Each structure stands twice: as C-alpha cells, then as structure tokens.
Image (cartoon, rainbow, N blue to C red; front, side, top):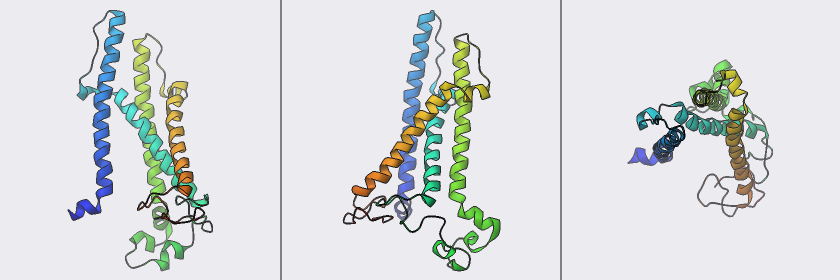
Length: 229
C-alpha cells in the first residue's frame, strides 16, 4: 500500500493509458473493418477485414497512436526548453520573474553546492554534468523524434496501401513526409497541444485548484509568479 501511495500518480496515468489504448484498438478495429466492408460492397468484392490482433500491429493503428504521442512529446520538449528563458507574469507554470536562464550552480545545487544526497552526476563536472543537467530535455526530444519517425513510417505504409488499393502510384518515404496528407495530420495535432499549454499558462494566472501543484494557493495574488500550491 505504501508503494501504491508513493507512486499513485504514475500508476494512475499508466492504467488510463492502457485503458485508452485498448478502447482505441477496439473502436479502430471496428471502424477499419466497416470501411473495408463498405468499400468491398461498392466494388462487389470480398472484404479484406482484419482480426483485432492483426489490426493492432497494422500501420493504420500505429499511425493513429504515433500521431498523438509525437505531438505530446513535442509539447513537453518545447515547454521544458522555453520555460528556461521565457516568463509569464502571474503563472505558476513560469519561473519567478528574476530567474530567467539556467540559474547559478548554487541555485541548481550542483558541483561544490551539491548536497550529500544529490545525484552523483550533479556532483561531478564535465560532460556528465552537462548531460544530467539537460537529461530531461534530451530524453523528451529523443522520444519525440522516435515517435515522429514512427508516425511517418506507419503513415507512409498506410497511405501507400490506400494508393495501391485505388490503383494509384505509391510515394517514396521522402515524398510522403513532404505531402499535404502527412502535414495536415501532423499540424492538426501540434496546434491542439500548443493551445492546451498556452491556455494552462494563462488560465492558471487567474483560476485556482486547491491542493494542486499546478495551481497557485487559492489566496495567492494574481500577479504571484512561479508560486505553486
């Protein structure tokens, strides 16, 4: 019970992630097969439906999942990066107005200012300290690039399957990532993430949620910046 309590946030989101993936697989499988049946009826052919097991390893399902994953990690990558230097007066999502930048070693508890229980790489210098100092941004960026690439490959495969089905010329991967089809779905996801982050930064200036670290204390002035409840 202690471990459940101490890891409740991550376990909760892992559980609803898995539930959402299962739900998406079931709904996507039904939608895919319905489209195949309708298309086959128009052409008076036998429909090429898939089992749910084959569907979840198909390009169609992979593209749908990766489209969302890459935009989420892009959102966090940009948020982590921009909040180092950019500020928003009154927002708990911003640092205090006099702390823009990477801050001093004393403020960051690194090198000679590290405490005995600080991570080892915070106490050493050189490339190891640099890597650890930027590790969150680096990993978020790598996950974004990996999921973006996976989206492009699965989307390319699904697009070409549709092209072949309609007796049209398939595209190379480079042609596909330069196509309107690819960027329409990509930018559709990006703009929704940018809207969500920007809304959170601004709305949290004036609105509160008692007990949440994403909100200022209920009684904090609207102008209080970098203060979390």
